[in-house]
Length: 212
Ligand SMILES: [Zn+2]
Image 1 (cartoon, protein in one colour):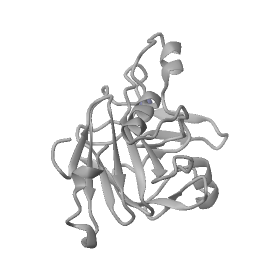
Image 2 (spheres, helix red, strand yellow; image 1 turned 30 degrees about the vertical axis):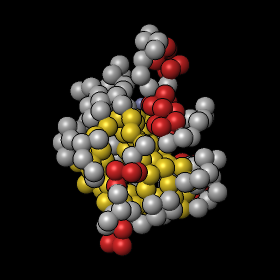
Image 3 (tube, protein in one colour; image 1 turned 45 degrees about the horizontal axis):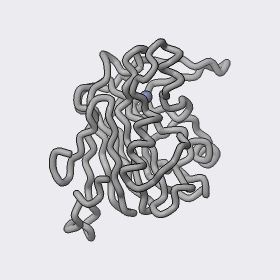
């Protein structure tokens, strides 16, 4: 955390924070080429989370675009995708990197988005062993007409960002993907920056209290 309104997610690290309905958060890729694994849970109910599969069922798209919402396991809107100042590639198909993935790659014990998620949740008092499908912001996965997937290193430029608005009170976890073996993070893992913004009626809310 660098100040009351800005949270730096260190390279390969994680941050978790609470966002109230109507508040927005911006995720910036300051150096470019970095994927962020984004997770969101309904406040007060860790059994209700942003579900990529439910979202795909509602919006009938594979990948998010501005103006659309993300839905929970209870089919409630949880986040709205407000703005996209990036090449527009965000994945909702690929699982979070995890210990087994790195063991397969010959690097057991490597940091992972899966472990980052559980670490972030625990900071917010949510203890879980389940790793949900993330929204992989800035991750470029393209399907062909035959259903094959092509993975391309993240194409974001320094300063590219996306903005989300909470539709309900929620806990958000953002992992700066530590993948440094495959080229998904162009040039290697780098930080991400989260900027929390209040709605007009909540400008005096203590933002720092929301960082877990
Ligand atoms: Zn990852």
